[in-house]
Length: 343
Ligand code: PMV
Image (cartoon, rainbow, N blue to C red; front, side):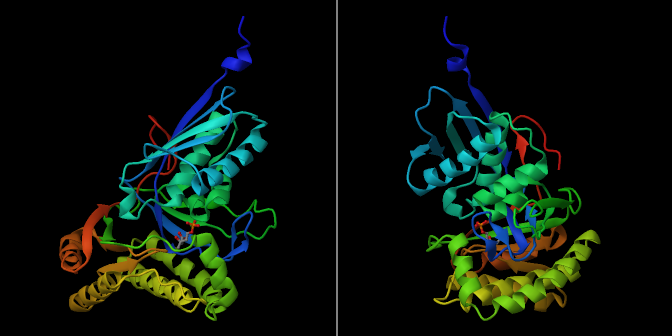
């Protein structure tokens, strides 16, 4: 009779979405555990997602990774293998795994964030390995793959508390408000034509900012009260108070990048023209009707309310170099395929 262990296969499929930070994570006080200097706040996006299946099987001689329909090796596989090692430690699971991951949004859109990828991998790997993990445990696990992935475990509006402990147990995301808290809030994702690939990994770039930007220390003082003001504005669904804070935070993040040595410049002339278009729309409206933000890339997220979305979208579409605009709402957090999301 066949050895039952030889036939044991454990599989799980998870779905997670990218998130866009309104308060950015930029700088790690511990690089191995990805413990941040400051807390951050984000919106998990609806309509775009990563779907990942993990299968542990005693028949596999090594870990394998398929991304968007292709088997890949090199740095993406190395990162996944390192991540699976952590899951194997947690579960005493000795087997190798096959990871099949695909995004329902084009990788070329620049939204192929590591956040949805590592959040989905954390869920699928932990469930497949039989680890009994709470959402907070999954957030801590996802964090070591990619910091921003800690936040994609939860839907809607999410805070990642920086924590104090050296072991990272208190550096974990938590849901602030679920995806239906503010249904009128729209994220117009402005995809910039010909956006360059990231020259260096964010995890390395941010450490360069910590070491060389004269603005890093000032940012650390500005972020906590700004995050509190944003939390209050979101609680009250007050766009007029939230939008200027979002832009101020984005400008602060960009100033830290630009004063890093050598400088980190993620924007193209078209991205900068989009920021200008948002400033013009607000000036012409006489009050803040839109807010721009971007992360370590050329694409720009423009928040607005449903009632203003058509006007704002038309202004953005008129900017030369804009390839297309996606209209997204807050969406759900990590969940198993075929099941509805909790938060
Ligand atoms: O999690 P990473 O290594 O992809 O870094 C994310 C950094 C930013 O996107 C710029 C900010 C953030 O908080 O998401």
